[in-house]
Image (cartoon, rainbow, N blue to C red; front, side, top):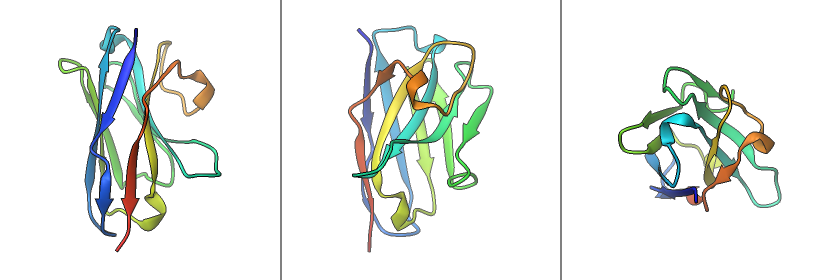
Length: 124
């Protein structure tokens, strides 16, 4: 059974940084493309960043390009999201997701497995 567990969320002031982690178990991590999504109450869950199963390519939403960095450690079955220069509009629940297949996708429906989410609040 695939399990994804996020950690690293919390309260941070505008301009601050956070690093989210997602520990995966129950599958061969290196065979899955990984992504981070986020959701604000009342809105659709939106794609933030994705990384190929090899770690060799990444994809970012335009809203976070140059601000967030996604990475993975296939030895530790973990994907990370480094979030810098955080803004109040980055406040959301952040979800880790996994999909098989050939590559990264920004489409929520293409992800098979999801974590429970971790809250990120950016506020002064």
